[in-house]
Amino acid sequence: MLERYLLDIEGAEMYDLRKGIELGRFHEVYKLAGPALEDMLCIQGEDEWMDFVTQQGPELEERPLCLHLAAWHRRCVEIGCYEGDVTEKLADYLRNNLTEEQFSSMERPAVNVDIDEPNGDLGPQLEPYRRQAEAWGCKLHAFFDDTYCAGLYFVFLEKPRPGRI
Image (cartoon, rainbow, N blue to C red):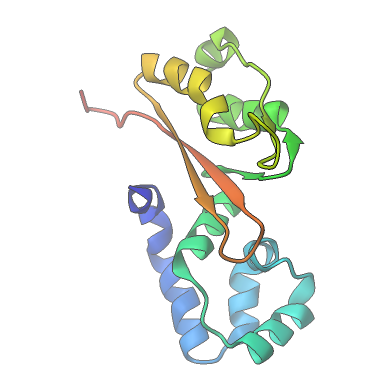
């Protein structure tokens, strides 16, 4: 299911990143996707990227890279597992991806994410948002990844495609 949301990222950008890594052009890879790499690997700057590929090797897991690229391109919103109150962060993402009418009519209950606390998991807290999105023909999906970090959620809003029923 995730692949459907990442198809547009899989194009030229992922090809260029894969090719750059394959050819050992790590400076070019950093120039293409530095902010996404920094976020994904918890590094700061090109020097730390170069240290990472020297020490860990150039292979990167594709799924987390695609998720971080999607967040970097604002195709989804990234939410940390211990981020606390993310109500406004989620609202900002939805404001930018729904019509003004839809967003203004949407109820926005508080969302507090801390996976170590009871009721702190993001999934169940998204249910009121999912129900409202479904009424407009949209779907709200959350994907979890903990490959390079303690854990992050990536929330995507799937909107109906024009011309589809």
